[in-house]
Amino acid sequence: MSPAAKWEYMKDVYPRYHQATRAEKKRILDEFCQVYRCHRKHAIRVLNGPIPSEHRPKRRGRRTYKDDVLSILQAVWEAAGYPWSARLKALLRIWLPWIRQRFRLTPAQEKQLLRISPAQIDRRLAHVKRRLRKRIYGKTKPGTLLKHHIPIKTDSWDVDRPGFLEIDLVSHSGDNAEGLFAQTLDTTDIHTAWTEAVAIFGKSQEAVCNAMDTIDEAFPFKIRGLDSDNGSEFINDHLWRRCQNRQVQFTRGRPYKKDDNAHIEQKNWTHVRKLLGYVRYDTSEALDAMNDLYRNELRYFQNFFQPCVKLQKKVRVGSKLTRRYEKPKTPWQRVLASPHRDSGKVAKLQALFKTLNPFELAKTIDQKLAALYRMSSTLKCRGSRPLPKILPASNRKPHSDFNTEQVLRPPLVASSTIFQSFLQDRDNPIWKFTKIHEKEKFLAAS
Image 1 (tube, rainbow, N blue to C red):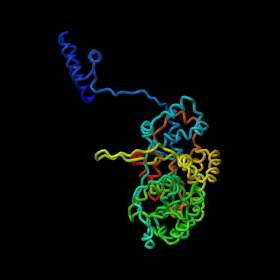
Image 2: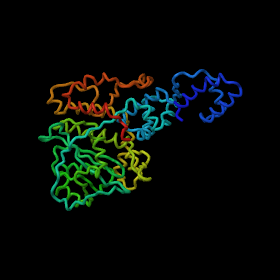
Image 3: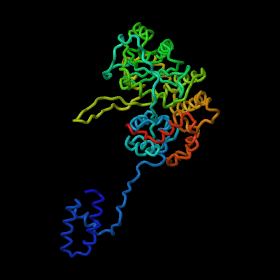
Image 4: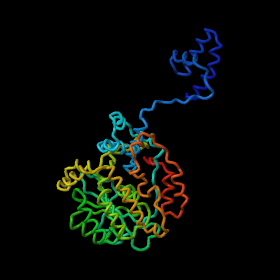
């Protein structure tokens, strides 16, 4: 029996109970307890209480988490690049030393911040969460050489050590694929989720091999295997001979099956496209700015301070498939737990980690992304326009505008007027990008 049906039944019994004799009230109470499924004392309290209203009153629970704690939670969530609730829960404990410095937490606030559950985070941030999603056709051209030498990998990864990478190129051509423009060579390790990226001009075989040399030096472990799509930038003699000389396993996915490279496709969105958007970069200044970001702040922020989850197992019960995940960890934590790491590189990274502050990294990333957006050729072709208030890269508010007085105010829903002038300008290269951002929920796929 639903609560609404119980309320209607109680409204019907209430006048009969007050007009009945003592013997009739006993029978009405027996009937009420059987239908209402409650204790006799509770039935007496309900029927002797005030006259029921026309509509069932809404229950209002006590608020466990105060507004200042929720404001701090929202500020950390924005600085971290809007991670989903399970990752944000793990991130709070990792970032706690810097959160104490920035927001001057009281013991009560710290206790609430660490106690909040992922489900409660979803509910508390529901009014500001959105999910960025956009699908466009890629510019991968199939490679015709050496396909019979490079085996196809279709099974799931089952590795117990770092060094097996998925690689892909992300195009920064904007709405015009003609000429030479920047590409991001994105790589991710399957075991640790450590990610490295290098920006190059075009997709020539030599440029890709040179970028792979840079990436080899950046990873804190030995490269043991590469898995790519079927683009000619990877399926060529240069990269094939390079892998053979270094005894690196080289495999490829099936044509037109992006799920075969699911790990790197996810990183293409979260680590590249979500930040740099869909505009065109085709100048040497933009390329240098991209590489400066990839090799410094963005690399440290994503690998040291961004927890991620890994699939542990799948359980099938009938037709229902349930996925079980490991506890969220940062790529840096997984590298430290692996016995196959490069001790020399790890020692340097440990000394570097002690000097980093995630809030300062996030602020610097926002500033560099804003400067990089001004270098976009798409923006120059459309005329001189001011930088939009909401950055197309990370869509985070500038941290320089934040002060301790804002922490004490409850989180507010973002006003639609912030986007009004920006959305009306359809010539803006990221108009559709922002429109999708407003319509789709951030945790719809979680």
